[in-house]
Length: 606
Image 1: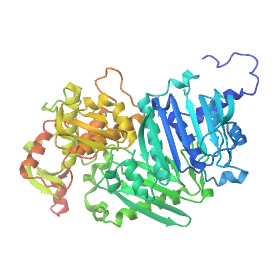
Image 2: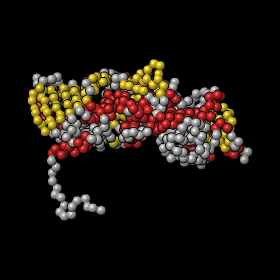
Image 3: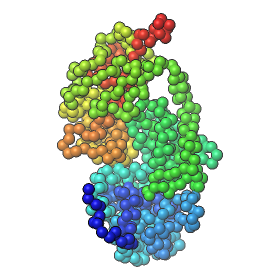
Image 4: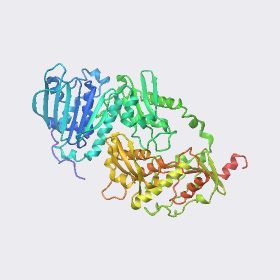
């Protein structure tokens, strides 16, 4: 093994060049164009802006501008703002323990200026003239008086142009726009009283007027449909308060992209708060489904540390358990007050024999054919084996399953109970079939077979449908338009907040275009967030299985839907036409057996 440095004298310790220092800081603060947008908009908000205008070209790679009507800066303040660790937001050491502003480190502007061409123009309301400063690669190249309205405008051009190693890691302009639009949506949800205008590539893209009602801002940012599915959440315990909105249990998404969390007005991606939200819905939603929530946590500034992450996305609470409990109680109380938990609480853990509750045996994440088979639980005689089958041929509709453990069409159909389960009888057992999980698995296998063989067949809509979406969701659909087309969706953007749907997968004809398109957008956004990308010429995309599973879930017969006998029989027969799997694509059991011996034991016959 070679040494990491030549043998001999150890290297001398020396001071880094100031330009290199700024570029290292930029590596922590400026990850992509959305990071620049975030830092500049935060500065505008800290300056008391009531109107913020954002302009981007090429997703922000080529050009970013943020204009505000805030307090502006004097010439002396503007020059200081471009120096490292110069800030108006901290005056003494104790201020670091009670931060009430978005920014506070004084690193953003010099870090951004070190990796771009930056122009700053600013004027205070009581000054006749303002100041303009131009900086290139961290060096001031021009400083002059300039006219303009009170406030500040900062332009950033050619991000990372002088650092090819950093620039090559940026994604396409469409993907970068999606990240910027997502953060702007979070800022708009945090501050409904601020007017936001966004221009993209020279045209108006988004306008969110200031409103007094937070739910109005949610409707503008996320869509009227999303807002209509929310219930208010509010709870206070001591000095801490949680307020906002969360979705009803009958409205859910395939990913966690609908969780918008804020601490003292600051958008965060906090694991503690996210876990508290997801945990409340764990027993209310199908496995692999997530709620929508716009939740604000308000705590005293000294009860939260926002100085734990360079980009300020993460926070640390003085009493994390108390905050977790507060969020959980607030959500559960909001849902319970509307009667949603009555059915869930009626089922006690001891209602069924432990051997007949296989849920813990199955994976919590989507388990498509590319995953290994789920391990059987102790009483899962029906799920004991599933033989591997060749890729493609095994998933073809109508193919005879290899070594299938049972044929559903050979069983005696007893009927439907609770408008959710089909009861079938074999020689030695009863079997409960979850109609939604079963139908979801059938649709998934058929969609996947069509995808592998030729791409999913499309059926044109007689009247194109317009679906409202968040700008980041529209960006994801446009960025992956070819993948969407192969999945059976013919879409085109309609502005920045909607898409026009011209065709859907033929197998899902008659389903709601809005529900299917929103599910597809969530999956594509989630895939982007995880860095999943398609290889050129590949027959499948890394996210294809998950997208197909989502489409199947949204299209399957729901729990609570009465089925006539012919529909019940058709569903059981269809399970015999696909490769056998014990679960739906999201991991919930298709069927649960109740062996005759166990039934007789419960009735005292054994």
